[in-house]
Every structure is written in structure tokens, then in C-alpha cells.
Image (cartoon, rainbow, N blue to C red; front, side, top):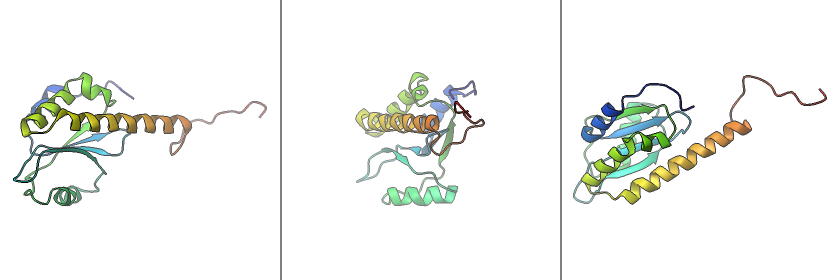
Length: 146
């Protein structure tokens, strides 16, 4: 799965440094990584996993529900991540997330917790694929004696 699909890490890091709100979409993990460095009087930055939205409007509504004391962002930047979760770290993208959240006043403990949960969800999905739980193969396994 960690294919040769090209990604522009420098551009992703640039976007992470400037975008108002960022959502990462993954290949096999259905949840999205929401990176929201915005802050308010009683509201700190937030990084967390969220369920997929069916539309941009739904994502804006869900963000307003999560962060009712903050004004709605002008835009939400969505980044498709076609690689394994560990590649976020080895590519330097996760360090850029950490930097942006630290600048906004968040601790690395929060981002580390979310990263650990993403890894767990990815392992869980890979195990389900191996077992065929919720996945279909393109071939059938022949059982001895058939």
C-alpha cells in the first residue's frame, strides 16, 4: 500500500504552516485527521480524529459543533495522504504538524496521542483486510481436497 504515488512534501509542509484548518484523508483509515490551530479566548488549538464528512458543508457544520466559540474558517484545506501513517513522520509532515500546533499553544503530547491512535486504526484495518473482514479478494482460496 505504501506505493510510489508522488506527494509534494514541501508543499504539504508549506500548507501546514499557513492554512487555517487542515483535514488529512487516508487510504485505509476511514477517520480524518483534523488539524485546527485556531485559538480564541477560551479555546486552544485542536488536533483530533473525526469521522468522514459527506460534503464540505457537512465538514463546516461539524467543525462549528466542535468549536462553537470560534468563527467559521474561510476554508478548510483537505490533503489526501496515500501512504502509511508512519510516512507522515518519516517524511517530516508530522513534525510540521507538531510545529504548527506548538506555535498555537498545544503540546506535543496531544499530537502524539492522535498519531498513536492513527497507527492503531491503520493496523486494525490491515488486520481486517488480511482476514477478509469487510474486504473482498480478487481471487478465491482453494481448500485442500476440493
